[in-house]
Length: 117
Length: 115
Image 1 (cartoon, rainbow over the protein chains, first blue to last red):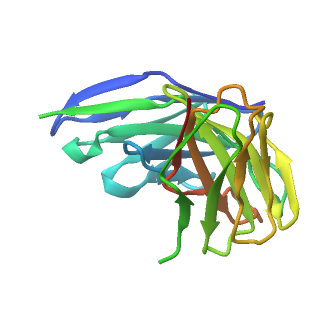
Image 2 (cartoon, rainbow over the protein chains, first blue to last red):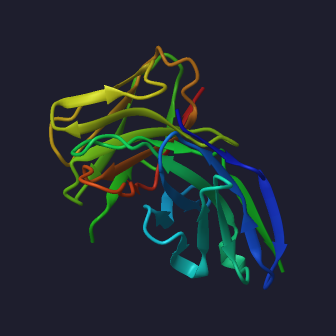
């Protein structure tokens, strides 16, 4: 069985300072991993995904994440926070499944990012 | 524009009533999903469908029902048997997987309040 742990339920940073949102996963095989962002009362938007190509993945809005197999981590970072980054962020792992099938996703419990002026 | 629409955005119902949430997509995706989101929790899968007229239960299917009569549509009915129906409901879709995992695309959600 696979699982995802987001290590911080809330993170608060000042505008212009770096962002680090931590995620650890558990999987019996090489997983596919995603980060999604959710603004209040909105759907989820994909930030980036890892699918066993490059271990450093660049996403939208200046975010990136590094897949570290030895640490079973997939932390999300951004060099400089912007007020518009304030939202909830979800780390997600996908089961391997079989070709031609739908894939079930396992979601972390989310990290609420606050950006202070 | 391609995307997923969910309606209505807010829905209020009395306890004991069934209610149906709409989800439509024009992305030509084969797979569709329904999730429930509660405060402080991640999303939990209710049902998913890979093809018209076929669907599978997710982790929390009790008290819910779905249908998939058209590729574009995947409505969710919250029945009176669902003990705690107040939540934010999200619909998603994706292509079927031929290799690496593909992302799911999400609708804007419906907030259901049952009193």
